[in-house]
Length: 373
Ligand SMILES: Cc1cc2nc3c(=O)[nH]c(=O)nc-3n(C[C@H](O)[C@H](O)[C@H](O)COP(=O)(O)OP(=O)(O)OC[C@H]3O[C@@H](n4cnc5c(N)ncnc54)[C@H](O)[C@@H]3O)c2cc1C
Image (tube, rainbow, N blue to C red; front, side, top):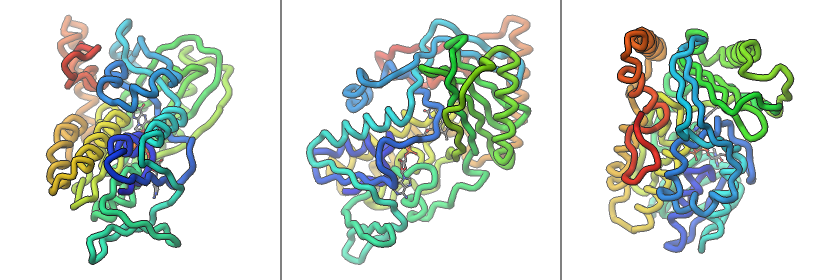
């Protein structure tokens, strides 16, 4: 069994597969590694119950809780919530390393640096993975290789062009923090997507993610956001840039999420919430499902997996095909209408459904620490 990609999806899949068979996790880079991400773990108080691997690492993970969230429509304040736990902020190099180590501590799980370039099914039914020089062979493969997944393309899925991915640009700022709030700017500068300021343990992550052609201007929009936040006092003038990076994020679930004993999980499958951009919990949940299904030895893993992840696909998907400008227009009209409604006392009725979607509170498990707004 080979798991390609050692992010949250791949490590969770490997953790679940452990003990039932030999599991090789491969990644194109050694760990710990950087991953461009806002690092917000939504509903993380529920995670120890949902994910046994997270329960194991929870005490070692450095977190900055967010109890104050402010949403804006471009520059105009739209909604503000205090007191509730919205998410924990983490640095991904630490989270992903801890999750990988939890998987490697389990019986039969090993790790190698290997950059997958091609995957094919041989006549004898074995799957052959190649990095161009070496070959690995497996009876089953979990494709957890992220947004530009080679495993996904080997199943015939199209690559991630502007209609199937958002472009993000993010900066990790180190500074004295004037506050521990997190801010989200929907339709920042009128573009389809949003900007964010997430408080970290030692500063802020500030980023912009934009859909379609607007993505080309992500870096410029990020500079505008930082300048705006400094002028409004949301960010201190004195700060040090620890790191700046660009990245793609999937915007739609691919047409094929499984084929025989090849299962796609996490970003490789396109499991990213189209409203919030949340992907880590979906990555772990899909990895968990794929791992459990393959570990069970069922004769039809493809069908089982398709059925099992359908509720996740429903949760993340609002539009099967993205038309970024149309999406921006509809969202703008809704945000405007809800804002006007707020003036005549309809604030919570009109805004709560959207905030619940942003905070990932639409389908909460029994016994959840969270409630809908
Ligand atoms: C800027 C940005 C901000 C985000 N903010 C948030 C947030 O705040 N909260 C949230 O929940 N989600 C967020 N997301 C989404 C989240 O980062 C992803 O959904 C999540 O990382 C998916 O996990 P994964 O394991 O599927 O993929 P990844 O974490 O991308 O891991 C994939 C792994 O595969 C490896 N790999 C790739 N190609 C190959 C190859 N050819 N061969 C071998 N290995 C390979 C990579 O090195 C990587 O380690 C954000 C995304 C972006 C881009």
